[in-house]
Image 1 (cartoon, rainbow, N blue to C red):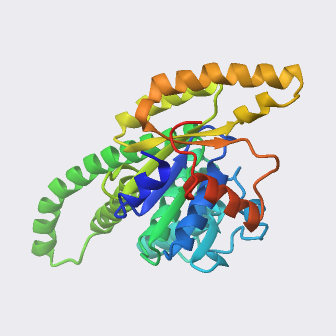
Image 2: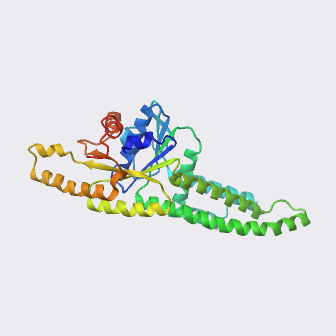
Image 3: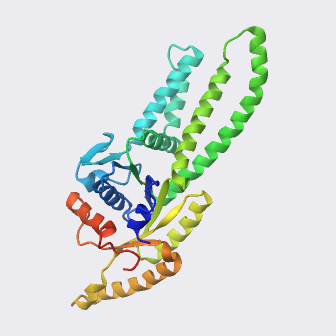
Length: 331
């Protein structure tokens, strides 16, 4: 089944993601997919949470930190700024401390802790969680094309979701057990809701946000996840390992897209020996890809003579991937 058909056959899969190691073409594939779906009459948002990616460069338009920016009819692009969400976290924490404890100002030692905690990697992951949820729960678009962070970060993202959920579940269960006794005491003393009840509500809110974010990656009925790889030995091995790890988190893998395939037609021309040897070596790895991933390979995308930047090149790539002459399963 081709990449085009795998998407057309499952219109209910509104969340489409391209994952893989950095620098293999995830962002350009995301942009081309969004362009093609928009040209089919769908409202599409392509967004990235990867600080290394640059939809701005690909679309040749400054979109960083500006929310959903219109690119063309039916197509919007957004680059998520995690720092902005971290600052919002800081402000929210300060407000809750002031509200719960009646302080006029946040004590210096607590402010120092807030600043230090914001530099922790987990804080950035939490900011990404919230950013993704904010984007997709709005329901403004028919399709959401998610340019996923590189594999290592994506796995950390998934594992953190599981850890957070288990941790909050345990605390929530403990709080609910304690709450019965607290309510009895509160009724006897005719007191209002305790501060701990507010904490329990906050924990439940956080758990809901985390679950909503992780479900986007793991809902096989609504999500299509494609691995991007190139015909190189180490990339093939890394993709195999990543596919196994992703399956442990129940991420539904919809297929694989092979990028940067040097056209065989060059062998018929007078080309340097170096390039001829590269093409012949590539044949070996393409055979390995076919043996390893079989029918799950959705497309082979040729190496292009120039970078994919600007709408004309994005349209060209979209036609290669999804047009009537799409490459399909055989290079």
